[in-house]
Length: 129
Image 1 (cartoon, one colour):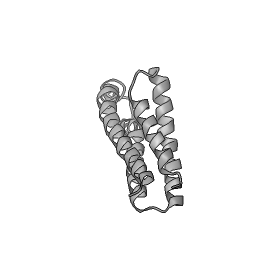
Image 2: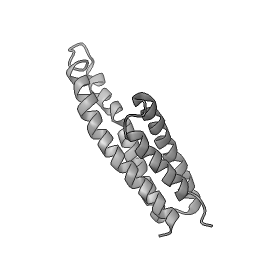
Image 3: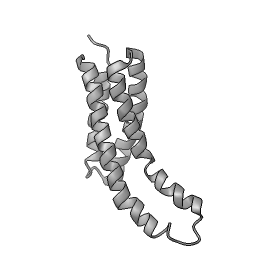
């Protein structure tokens, strides 16, 4: 495995780790309180009660799937497919990093982890010299 593939795989590991931690925190700090207040209201339709927690975890699922795609791309994809995978997953991670930085004023480590994964993606999709 060359250093570009190693960087891409490491970006996937960082992204996956960040996604799992994000999912646990979102479940504890956001989904449970929302379920206890808004979703416990008897007038809330059943479809909304089922949909809201899934939507709150959508970014977790996307980041985890992206992490898996990066690791697979590093191992088995050709350079052009690695580039496309890196661009798509990098877009997800960039949105997450910017959103986290903006929402927390930079006081949360999530944006730093996503930024590190982005830097590794950039290294991973470059052609070997």
